[in-house]
Image 1: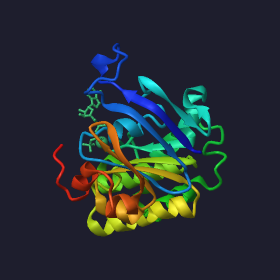
Image 2: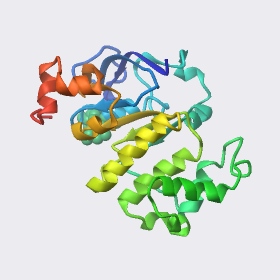
Image 3: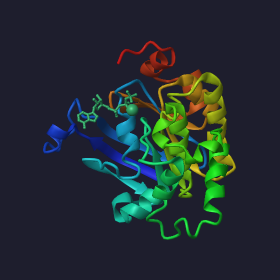
Image 4: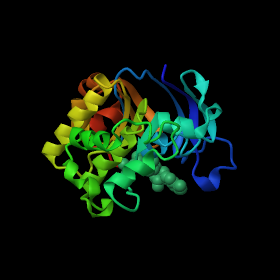
Length: 253
Ligand SMILES: Nc1ncnc2c1ncn2[C@@H]1O[C@H](COP(=O)(O)OP(=O)(O)OP(=O)(O)O)[C@@H](O)[C@H]1O
Ligand SMILES: [Mg+2]
């Protein structure tokens, strides 16, 4: 099992001292497993806790209550730098480091034991990843800050992939892409999962995108899981009234 999430609760910061699960905790007593052999989607309306949950998987934040196991071992027992190299994270709003796209790649591998000196043909590898994600490799020596948001999103993913992670956490990775680029990107995500053996964990509020990516899903509403299971089943035949409303786009936040 890739991840086991057990009784995970995350309070709003001011309430951290209070150890009980309050009604307005950000995440409330989450329990589910992630197999890793298919994409895992985290679906839910805006403000439901998706980003907060995703950040727990590489310890950008920790739960106040509950445990997360990674390969059967408590996630807090791993060295945090090693963990973050193994579990890459691409944030909802892409942040570029100062300098060129190439220096962004260099920065990503600077602390790795097998850093850029060890990665054969480092520059070629960077170009290859950009092309793989449909960003022209001519941007390699452009100032990263000058890229469009959609390009930044894909460079942020390429910058994470250069570290050769085993899991990739994607937070609304297509929010700045047009429909054609979105479909192409979702196709790439499936390839990462199926051909490159990466485990993809992806946050989205889009039912359409969930259908394209497939795999397993949880539906998060108000910080709690209202339904979990195969994406197709959840979308076509949900057990839960709230899920049905969400799928039909009729759920108020
Ligand atoms: N540090 C914090 N302090 C207080 N409230 C917070 C904090 N972080 C998140 N929240 C609140 O927790 C809720 C969940 O936030 P989160 O960013 O996880 O939602 P989301 O599902 O990712 O939403 P979106 O789809 O808009 O990105 C929101 O109501 C948010 O305001
Ligand atoms: Mg979010």
